[in-house]
Image 1 (cartoon, helix red, strand yellow):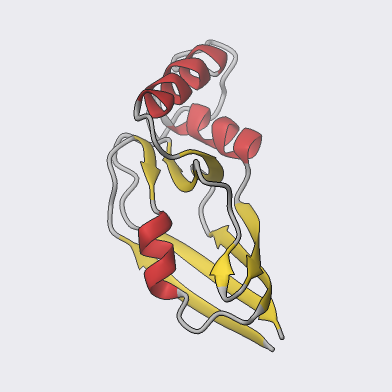
Image 2 (cartoon, helix red, strand yellow):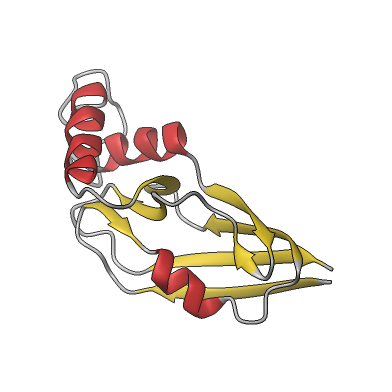
Length: 137
């Protein structure tokens, strides 16, 4: 069985947002075993899996990546869409546009403290489109 769902997330402000619940609402009737692949159709946002309990983790992600990829760096040539645009592209490439999660017993098989993050790197990124592909038996 292969099934695909495409939908839009509501706009989120810049930052790291747990979207596990939103994803779980979209993926009804998971197979007994399989994989769920989630892809974001944008070049200035990313997806990742990380700590879902302590919100300071999200703040630390923001602080670290802003230090690693600062705005207004004079080496950037792609600057027409604002100071947050080129850093957003670089951050999105560092974290990546997709995640894959195993399915066991008709549920996402993640660790106790793991959650799915939307990493929004633009100040005003707007709605983001996701494609979820479910593989399984």
